[in-house]
Structure formats: C-alpha cells, structure tokens
Length: 218
Image (cartoon, rainbow, N blue to C red):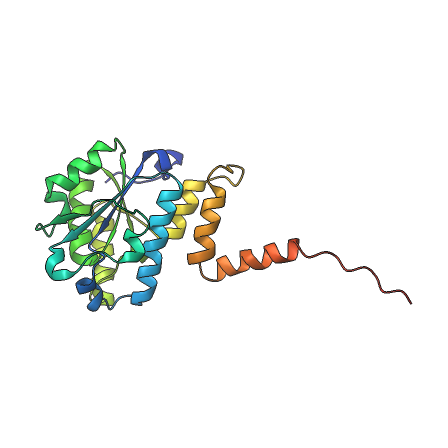
C-alpha cells in the first residue's frame, strides 16, 4: 500500500472532481449514523464550495422514480444540470458516470453519498483500485447505522481511500489565505454552512467594523 503523504497528495481545485451519489429521500429515511439535517447541510456546503473553486460536480441518483429526486439543497446549486440516474448500485460500474468524470480531465476523485457502506464504498474502492486518487467526504455521507458507516470508512481506508470532511476539503482547496480570488465565495459558504465558525466570522466582521467609542469627557 502506498501511503498518501507529501505536498502533492493534498487536494488541488484544478485537479479535483466531485461525485455526489444518491442524496435522495429514500436513503435519507434510513440514515442513522448522522443527523439527517447535518448531512443535507454538509452536502450542500460541499457542492457550493466546489462551485466556488470551479471544481466540476457530477450529480447521480439511483432509480429516482422510486427513491426520489436529489435534495433541492444540492440541485439548486447547479440549476439546469443533468442528474445521471442509474440502475447500478455501484456508481463506478455505470459507464455514463465514469465517462463524465473522465471528461473533466481531473485525477483527484472526491466522493460523497448515501449510504456510506454501499453506494460510497463500492465506487471508492473500485476507483482507488484503478489508480484514481480517491477521497471520501465522510460528513456529507452516512449509513444505516453508526456501525455501518464506521466499518465502511475502515474498509475504504484499508483499500487506500482518503477520508476528509467538507470543511477540510474546502480549506485544502483554498490552501493560502493570500489567494483571494475564490475567498469571498468560500466565506459565503462558511457563513451559511459552517455553524459556529461561520457565526464567529460574522462576529469578527462586526467587531472590525464597529467604531472605537470616544472617551467620555469628565
């Protein structure tokens, strides 16, 4: 097994492509490893961060006529974009999805989806075995139980898949606060989706923009 380390192993927006898999009502109904609302929040955040950094995002569902459409919190980020609807449980066996990923020319594959133990683990393990630099965003994914999610994460790590959270992915894409081109868009994502960190930023902005009161005259 080759260890993932060194500067070149860090995520770069120009080399990244995101695949969001099966964020659908049916899967959400039996999501028990995470708070469902948090997974919706984190997936939307990952989608918005990818858009902010011009990272291509592939949206895919499985039998949407039965399982429901992908959450609007995700699809609204990419108005008009086609969602690839599959019959394959393993996304990486669906040639339409694979061709869409390959067409981007990117080599760093980032995956999130429902459920971790099935629809995330299968494509992540296969893609890693085919030589893709594969990362799974664990907090934009989830399983039918805590055990199912955790065992899937362990299984993927053993297969050489990298594990990250959406905020860590965003920070790695940003890399340097002096890179200001994408920073305003990233800050908007953090304000909306990063919980206390977003609120703390708003507070900091408030303090910086509050005039220093003059000393009272005795």
